[in-house]
Length: 275
View 1 (tube, rainbow, N blue to C red):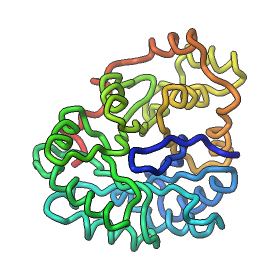
View 2: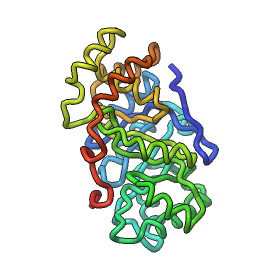
View 3: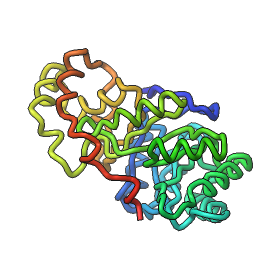
């Protein structure tokens, strides 16, 4: 199957559903990628901090799919912020991945108290110009962080990857991203660690479409124009997560799901998280 993709401001396109890989280890993630690519996935999300980039690279190479057809994202954490540390950081990630470039490179967390995300972003611009990544973006950035990037560099991130689900909808952030041409990508899209999928509202909608609550939630992300990266290593769940393109949610469904929103305070605060 062909997964829909969304245009990025860098001129590339990102598949709307990808495979999240935290906290899979190298062996688990290699097997998961091979299975995922076999059934149609073309997007894999990892990070230096996940400790599984070696396995991601192995899975990409073992998949038998040409490199240019698989969208690979990685993220550099706080150890690579400031000065030009991200240059060595991405070189190390590319070495572990066994790749010449990544499709998307993200700043993992803003860490505003360190006051280094602007200089880090300027280094990312160099990496983009050098062809070591096809697009650059951020993760867990708030409007204030993005305003500062724009004011001091003039370069708009292609993607902002944030914690987002029907329980934590971050509507203000999503509006900001849309207004500035930034694609919003959802991590923890199924509300990992919460009872989101047990909500009666989701069970009722799932019965209506003969789907699972998880599939309803993934469809919610798609219908809201989001990129979504659910994590699983189970072949059945990998297939289930792709079986969401034969239905759409109607206005009544979306209104019912909106009652699940617990507010942004229910999620992580990226001013204080990510260390």
